[in-house]
Amino acid sequence: MAPIVPLTGPDTYFTLAGALPGTWAVSCLTPPGFRTDEPLPATREALVEGLAQAVAASTGGDTTDPVILLGTSSGGILAHETARHLADHGTPVRAVVLLDTYILESPAARALQPHLWHGLYEREHHADGFTATDLSAYAWMEQLIHTWTPAPTPFPTLLLRASDPLPASPGADPVPHDWQTALPHITTTRTTPGNHFTLVNQHASAAAGHITDWLTGLG
Image (cartoon, rainbow, N blue to C red):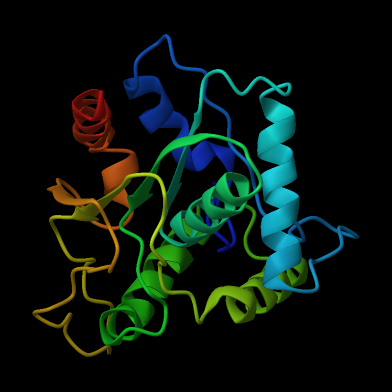
């Protein structure tokens, strides 16, 4: 699942996907509303239901091999909620992997927000920039999921959190000492090399190693 922030999409996972076992079928879903004239979901339930339908369609109706959902940052929120919806409606879910996903209303997430946006603005210089559609879609999506807290699940969950904080942005308060994410109702929490952005690219091989090792341990 791609995050809800602008300038993210399937390319976010390109390096990580290449580091995962070659026998795995990997695909990426992006939240709706970030393209011109693409409608936004009216509610969180509508957002999750649409993503769940897309996941089910991607399997061709084959439920013999349960799906694994993964998301980085806010994409982890979408992966977690979509997996719960699938499980509640009879689609087997093997596991969910959250990559440095935060509860958006947590003190740690709020303290990191200026550093996160500084990093996104730095990335903007290497792309076409933010559009009004990007920013309005982000603002709406953030309102839909900002109260999210992970609920208990019938499937195992892995939280991989970054070993390094984001670089402090100019003029912002220093990164707090308790900046790392912590989530309730998670089966396993591990720390992987990199920061919020680099754990899925420069350090993707380490993250892939944690994921494959954990899934192997599940049997």
